[in-house]
Amino acid sequence: MCDWDLINKVWAKVEEDLAGNGQTVLLRLFEEHPETKAHFPKFKDIPLGQLTSNADVKTHGNTVFKALGDVVKQKGKHASNLQALATTHINKHKIPPQNFTLITNVILKVFAEKFPGEMTAPAQEAFSKAFKAICSELEDLYKKGGFQS
Image (tube, rainbow, N blue to C red; front, side, top):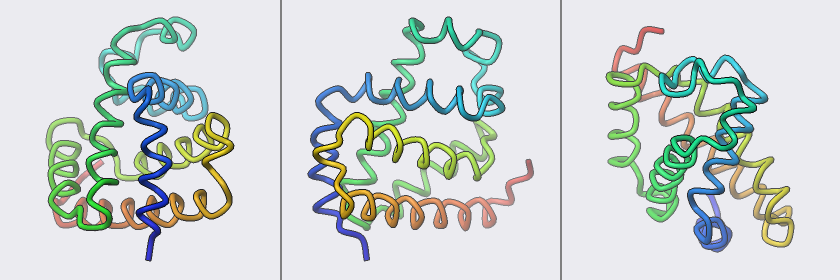
C-alpha cells in the first residue's frame, strides 16, 4: 500500500514549477541514459548541452509531469490513466516499457536533490513503492498491448 497522501503533499511542491521540474528530469534522463533521447524526435539530434535552453524540452517536461500528476492525484485508482498512457506510448511513441523505470528512478533522485525537506525517508519510500507499482502495471499493459520493441 502506498502513502498517496504523503506523495500528494510532495507533489504540491513539485507543481509550484511543474514545467521546470519536468525539464530537469528530462535533461537528467538524457544525461544518465543517452539512449532514451532516441525516442524523442525533436531532441534526438540536439547535443545535450543545447537542450538546457530548448523550450520544447520544458514544454515536454510539463506534459510528462502533468500526466504523472494526474496519476498521483488518483491515489491508486489510476487504471484508466495508465491505460491511456500505455496506449499512446505503445502505438504512437513506441517507447519501451523499461523507460518508465528509468525516468521514475531519475525522478526520485531529482526530487531528493530539489526537495530535501519534503523528500524524507518515508516520502522516498512512498514514491518508490508507487513508482514500482505504476511501472509494473504499465509493463502488464504493454504485454496485453502486444508491444514489440
